[in-house]
Amino acid sequence: MKLNAKDYEYFKKALLDQKAGLLNEANKTVESELGVKNEELADTVDRSTVETDRNFTLRLRDRERKLLKKVDDALERLEKGELGDCIQCDRRIGINRLRARPVATLCIDCKEEQEQKENQFG
Figure 1 (cartoon, rainbow, N blue to C red):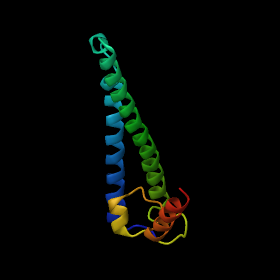
Figure 2: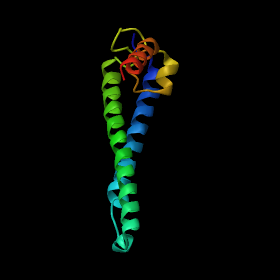
Figure 3: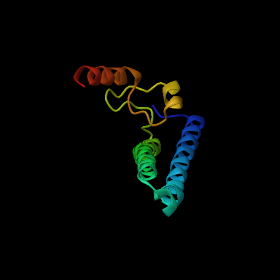
Figure 4: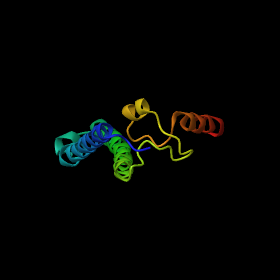
Protein backbone atom coordinates (compact mmCIF):
# COMPACT_ATOMS: atom_id res chain seq x y z
CA MET A 1 0.00 0.00 0.00
CA LYS A 2 1.49 3.31 -1.07
CA LEU A 3 1.42 6.46 1.02
CA ASN A 4 -1.07 9.11 0.00
CA ALA A 5 0.30 12.37 -1.44
CA LYS A 6 0.02 14.23 1.88
CA ASP A 7 1.93 11.55 3.80
CA TYR A 8 4.50 11.25 1.01
CA GLU A 9 5.25 14.98 1.22
CA TYR A 10 5.30 14.87 5.02
CA PHE A 11 7.86 12.05 5.12
CA LYS A 12 9.96 13.47 2.32
CA LYS A 13 10.24 16.80 4.15
CA ALA A 14 10.88 15.13 7.51
CA LEU A 15 13.63 12.91 6.11
CA LEU A 16 15.28 15.70 4.11
CA ASP A 17 15.20 17.98 7.17
CA GLN A 18 16.74 15.23 9.31
CA LYS A 19 19.43 14.65 6.69
CA ALA A 20 20.23 18.37 6.50
CA GLY A 21 20.52 18.55 10.29
CA LEU A 22 22.87 15.58 10.43
CA LEU A 23 25.07 16.98 7.66
CA ASN A 24 25.12 20.39 9.37
CA GLU A 25 26.30 18.84 12.63
CA ALA A 26 28.97 16.84 10.81
CA ASN A 27 30.25 20.00 9.12
CA LYS A 28 30.39 21.83 12.45
CA THR A 29 32.49 19.01 13.90
CA VAL A 30 34.92 19.03 11.01
CA GLU A 31 35.22 22.81 11.00
CA SER A 32 35.61 23.50 14.69
CA GLU A 33 35.28 20.80 17.29
CA LEU A 34 38.18 18.59 16.28
CA GLY A 35 40.79 21.32 16.20
CA VAL A 36 43.07 21.60 19.22
CA LYS A 37 44.77 24.78 20.28
CA ASN A 38 48.28 24.58 21.70
CA GLU A 39 47.20 26.15 24.98
CA GLU A 40 44.70 23.31 25.48
CA LEU A 41 47.62 20.88 25.73
CA ALA A 42 49.39 22.66 28.57
CA ASP A 43 49.36 19.65 30.88
CA THR A 44 48.38 15.99 31.03
CA VAL A 45 44.97 16.61 32.56
CA ASP A 46 44.11 19.13 29.84
CA ARG A 47 45.27 16.72 27.13
CA SER A 48 43.24 13.94 28.68
CA THR A 49 40.13 16.11 28.82
CA VAL A 50 40.56 17.19 25.20
CA GLU A 51 41.01 13.59 24.07
CA THR A 52 38.00 12.40 26.07
CA ASP A 53 35.85 15.15 24.59
CA ARG A 54 37.13 14.41 21.09
CA ASN A 55 36.45 10.67 21.43
CA PHE A 56 32.94 11.36 22.72
CA THR A 57 32.27 13.71 19.80
CA LEU A 58 33.56 11.17 17.30
CA ARG A 59 31.35 8.43 18.78
CA LEU A 60 28.34 10.73 18.47
CA ARG A 61 29.24 11.56 14.88
CA ASP A 62 29.63 7.85 14.08
CA ARG A 63 26.10 7.23 15.37
CA GLU A 64 24.91 10.14 13.26
CA ARG A 65 26.73 8.70 10.22
CA LYS A 66 24.84 5.44 10.69
CA LEU A 67 21.57 7.35 11.07
CA LEU A 68 22.36 9.30 7.90
CA LYS A 69 22.62 5.98 6.04
CA LYS A 70 19.21 4.97 7.43
CA VAL A 71 17.75 8.31 6.32
CA ASP A 72 19.14 7.83 2.80
CA ASP A 73 17.71 4.30 2.73
CA ALA A 74 14.33 5.60 3.90
CA LEU A 75 14.34 8.26 1.16
CA GLU A 76 15.07 5.52 -1.38
CA ARG A 77 12.22 3.37 -0.01
CA LEU A 78 9.94 6.42 -0.16
CA GLU A 79 10.74 6.98 -3.83
CA LYS A 80 10.12 3.29 -4.59
CA GLY A 81 6.79 3.39 -2.75
CA GLU A 82 8.10 1.00 -0.09
CA LEU A 83 8.35 3.31 2.93
CA GLY A 84 6.08 1.88 5.59
CA ASP A 85 6.43 -1.74 4.50
CA CYS A 86 7.97 -4.04 7.11
CA ILE A 87 11.09 -5.62 5.62
CA GLN A 88 10.56 -8.78 7.67
CA CYS A 89 6.87 -9.65 7.31
CA ASP A 90 5.71 -7.26 4.54
CA ARG A 91 2.89 -5.86 6.68
CA ARG A 92 2.36 -2.11 6.95
CA ILE A 93 4.23 -0.19 9.63
CA GLY A 94 1.76 1.92 11.56
CA ILE A 95 1.63 5.57 10.55
CA ASN A 96 2.18 6.69 14.15
CA ARG A 97 5.34 4.59 14.34
CA LEU A 98 6.54 6.06 11.05
CA ARG A 99 5.84 9.59 12.23
CA ALA A 100 7.86 8.91 15.40
CA ARG A 101 10.67 7.19 13.50
CA PRO A 102 10.52 7.71 9.73
CA VAL A 103 13.55 5.43 9.21
CA ALA A 104 11.73 2.45 10.77
CA THR A 105 11.99 -0.72 8.70
CA LEU A 106 10.12 -3.09 11.00
CA CYS A 107 6.50 -3.09 12.17
CA ILE A 108 6.04 -2.95 15.93
CA ASP A 109 5.49 -6.74 16.21
CA CYS A 110 8.69 -7.59 14.32
CA LYS A 111 10.64 -4.93 16.23
CA GLU A 112 9.48 -6.33 19.57
CA GLU A 113 10.42 -9.84 18.42
CA GLN A 114 13.88 -8.57 17.38
CA GLU A 115 14.39 -6.87 20.76
CA GLN A 116 13.33 -10.00 22.64
CA LYS A 117 15.87 -12.07 20.70
CA GLU A 118 18.59 -9.48 21.36
CA ASN A 119 17.78 -9.55 25.09
CA GLN A 120 17.81 -13.36 25.15
CA PHE A 121 21.03 -13.85 23.23
CA GLY A 122 22.83 -10.66 24.12
